[in-house]
Amino acid sequence: MSSNMDVCLKELALKLHEIDAVKFGEFKIKSGSMSPVYFDLRVIVSYPEVLSMLADLVNDVRIKEKITSKYVCGVPYTALPIATLVSVKGNLPMLMRRKEKKDYGTKKLIEGHFKCGEDCLIVEDIITSGGSVLETATDLRNDGLLVKTALVIIDREQGGKKRLQEKEIQTLSLYTMSSFLDILLEAGKISPKVVEDVLKYVADNKIPTAGDAAEILVDRMKMSFTERSVLTKNPLARELFTLMEVKKSNLCLAADLTEAGDILNLAAEAGPHIAIFKVHVDAIRDYSQDFILSLQKLAEKHKFFLFEDRKFADIGNTVVNQYEAGNFQISSWAHIVTSHILPGVGILKGLRQVMEKCDGDRGTFVVAQLSSDGALTTSSYAQEAIRLTQGFEEYVTGFVCQDGKLLKNHPGVIQLIPGVKIDASGDGLGQQYNSPATVIGINGGDIAVVGRGIYEAKDVAEAAEIYRSALWEAYMKRIE
Ligand SMILES: O=c1ccn([C@@H]2O[C@H](COP(=O)(O)O)[C@@H](O)[C@H]2O)c(=O)[nH]1
Image (cartoon, rainbow, N blue to C red; front, side):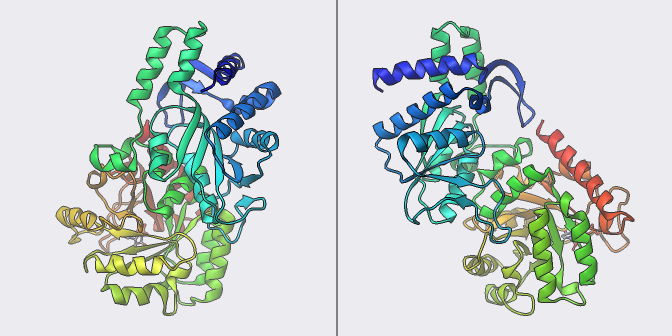
């Protein structure tokens, strides 16, 4: 690094400290744990001089490292003003990524003019896990752009760089946590004890990478959905993790009604409170293509995923036809389906064959255990079901499973638990119920499926909100 750049970096670090863009003390962070350091680079918009210095340094690094990207895109929102100045000062066209999640109709996510196949540099303020950079990179890549480099202001050295490397993104940073602390220490702004505390915190809070996850024991029950979103290999699971955090909902509503109109009314009422809307289309008396179009509009409006609980259970070739053809053409509209693994991996190969042709991300929940009394899905069956999905991680969103311990060290998959009701233990037909607190807090569910507990209520919107808040509270308590 040139000495002039060194001087500028020192000056900028001290300014960031002066304007409280970095603070030391005890801060409760999103996951609920306490951090001895807190960065808030949002404040820089009030300091044009700091913003300008930042943009100059980003452009200096870009030139020095011979980054030849044709566009720059800031991760919303904090990095947007930085990217704007980098673009203007460096004469580098900017692209803007919308924050709204994809898969809801044809909404454009990347604004600006660009040529497919060109490279876009991502600019971000801080990386911890690399999740936000990855979300932006995924949307840019989905629109045909290349993403090879992310240039960040501060790398907290908690694993984000390695994770992005796994996704073929090289990360450059103006500062690492250590280099930033060194500057403040040398200037007498912080004590050696603060440096020691922060570095210990960083070392103790490294976020595992997808590679690590297979090797080391990570307790997914203690990890936030955001942290887990970068560990999954299934793009639909990644979107689902993100949507759940945005809507603060880990509720899947089972719409087991038999009239299309009633199902649409239920979706309209409960839509704002749910992450997933689950149907059994073969039980709908007046199923039609218009019904699906209306359901898709509601999914787009209220932002939830569509789930056909088909529980495929045949040989791969038959499942291909059942999934993509017939009256229901499930793969054309259902983001999620369920499948048994009883026939062996041929069924996953069949689903994969169809998913690869789909417009938009798809995934399956493999049934590892059932909620009904006397089910033959023993714990060894469940273990075998999980093992058989190895090699199909890109297509498996998660497992329908009652016992969370089975998935303890699989942070990238989602555990879906049906059989949830606040005030009942069964239905007389074999269904067994647990409370929201038990399924999420004790049994390890990430998402709870609730049917009759909501659609049989007098006020379904109110009931959906009661379940949403109980389930979300249980999740927040679990990751504390
Ligand atoms: O093991 C399983 C797998 C799926 N289900 C489905 O979930 C709902 C539960 O409805 P409730 O009214 O809340 O009982 C239903 O659609 C089942 O097909 C399950 O219950 N158990």
